[in-house]
Length: 190
Image (tube, rainbow, N blue to C red; front, side):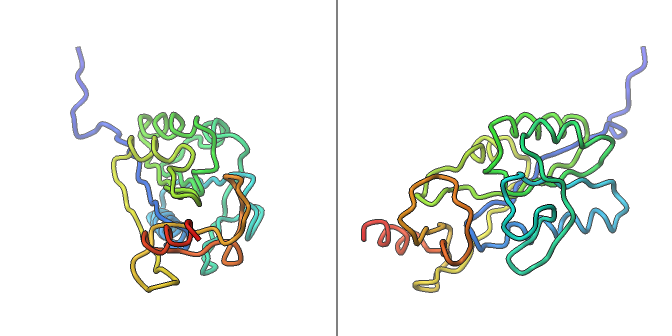
């Protein structure tokens, strides 16, 4: 009977970059993916098809960094399109269906490095979409913070400046601003 040596086992993992809007999540995702490309790794990047804020195809950060991606309407499509890759990037994971958790697990178990970026909380300060489950199964988590536009403290909440109440509402500085806990709840009560 042949037993494979431990050090040749192909190991994948899940990295998550989370935080509020304007904290640099997508910028960090792009940085990690470009480094993988520089290392000549086979990389595929995916984003939800509903996110067309900056570009229909590219993943674009607020500071205009960009990387080519494939928009997908359902998480299962990622498994179909991520054939023979070493690194998979997924942006705006909070907008995907709950199946994204199993997609990430399947990829990681097959030896793929999976890098996921997304909002951990919605505009009301509640866990957002599949992000709690993604965070629970991640091997590495990086939580980024923005700066509160009201007081200058560390911000980890995305405050919605409009009266809209739907959970998913694409927008930028016209609709959202980063706030610290105190300023966020002060705004919620106003």
